[in-house]
Amino acid sequence: MPPLVLRPTAWRMVCTALFALLLANLAPKAEAAESVYTKIVFDACETLSLAEEDGSVSLRCAGYRDIPIFYNEGDLRADIDFGAPNEEFATFGGFNSVGPTVEWRLDGGRPIAAIIRFFVRSADGGADGQVLSVHKVGQPKAPGCVVAYVDARANRNANELARDVADARVPGFACGRDRPAYVGKVGPSGQGATAVER
Image (cartoon, rainbow, N blue to C red; front, side):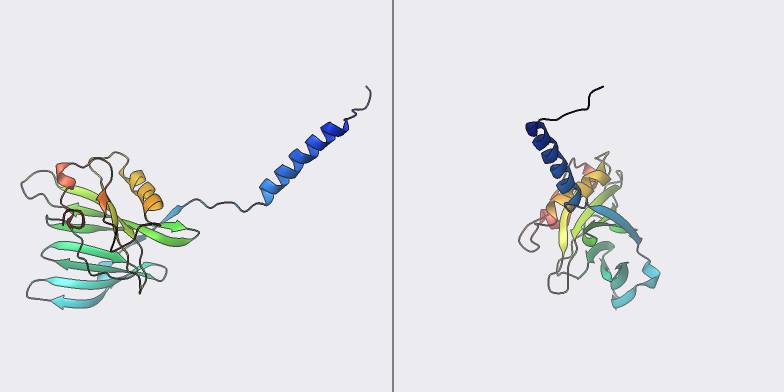
């Protein structure tokens, strides 16, 4: 069998393809957003304030690495902030509480969003609600806020939807200017977020 001989044009094409492949392997890879999970251990939280007459309490809890969680409760309703407390008590009209699990969305290893589940009691004897609250993680001089809500009972893919919202909306969301909104379907048991309806 005679040896394979490539014409100069063919050599150029082969070299160009190999060079492009080399550049693709050397180029920095874009990191996809990822999740890490932590638990809020309320018994281990630091009490910042406590009013025995109405049962309201403010706590500082351990979060992810050095990012604290600020939990407030009053009139059997909860508010939660990540990274730094803000001045808004973002809760629901019905009595509610938060679950202990926090999903942190990381961008390049840095937490930019936090997702937590609210359990909302029905006021009329109907089904209780479960709503995923998507938060922008704040810093001491730039507190975070609620960015969006996902009704976990009305949306089959609620967790995926909350992650997508966190990745897409949180980076450009301006707390104090932009207002949070519901994303996806909203059933009767998932309504009543005060940050949306004020």
